[in-house]
Length: 270
Image 1: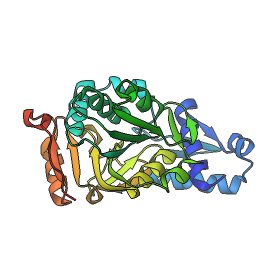
Image 2: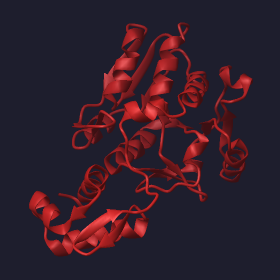
Image 3: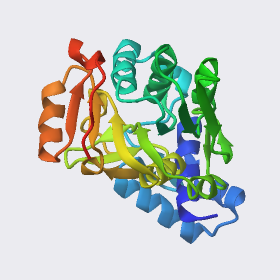
Image 4: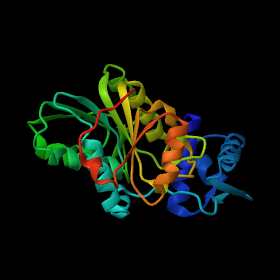
């Protein structure tokens, strides 16, 4: 089992059980105690857990992955505004990549609501995203990446996602996240999904970040990209001034979805 997969397993076990032991991890992964202790130490340095004798506990205040159904209920109106503004960036005939998450799910619903939009190809690794897009068929062509199914986000991850993404290049990628730190690093709490997000960015001509201001100041386990790799950031929330300063520092166009004019289709740079 690769180190990245082992460490994601550790994070998931912590979220479910509140404690992981080296002995239990060794039985599950068939990896040596020395290697597992090194994994725990590496995760402790990122701040997602704290080491205790024989294993680890979640770090106080660390972000735990929740189901997409749970996160969709949090700040639902804010995410809906982001979804509508992001959908306004899409044109007839576009091909897009739409990754998993509650904010990108709001984007999917907003795309379906745009009855004027036709000949759209949407490629996604999210089962919930695909189902949300289904009512727009045949106006839309909806393609699932394939891959290994993860619970909580109902996402498809490696193995097998990379091989599908390697053969495509789309007009636009719409990407969500769980953290945006003060240095402009975009992160995600889930390592396998962060990997897919990076591959989606690489497979697109233009990139749009969809994330509300609650993500500001957080740095999670999986690095997705730098903010400067995106042409546009669609944001909403109570800390728009902070988002504006960060986007200006990294040369990214900001669309504040809280503004009434954000509902209008916009032209992206980059």
